[in-house]
Length: 127
Image (cartoon, rainbow, N blue to C red; front, side, top):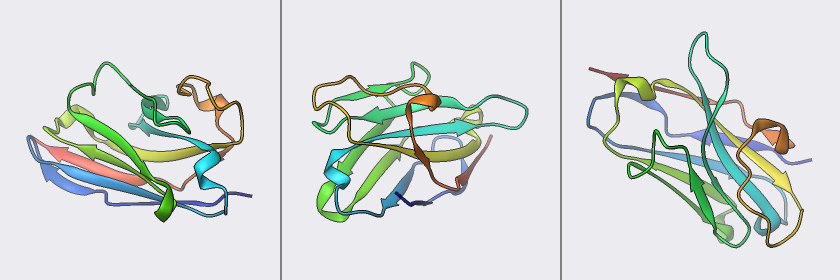
């Protein structure tokens, strides 16, 4: 069982930055594929960013060039650096993990590919 705890959300103004963190339990974090998703009120959960075991990344078109996903295996933590935030980035942000899997697979970009989820952290961007 993998437990994920997100932090770093908050209320910011358009153009500001935030860094989300997701701390994972388990002794095999380096073998996890990790991802960030978000869900705004009345909308479906959508892909934001993903990182593989070998640090290959992928991003939603809406965040490319503004968001950066990274991981620190020594700290069992994945990060989402969010710059130039926009009001449309307002959502609950969720961290997700998939344990194991092939070393060379592509970043996972759909919710059903992940086995574990955090509780979410609210990001609100005011205009």
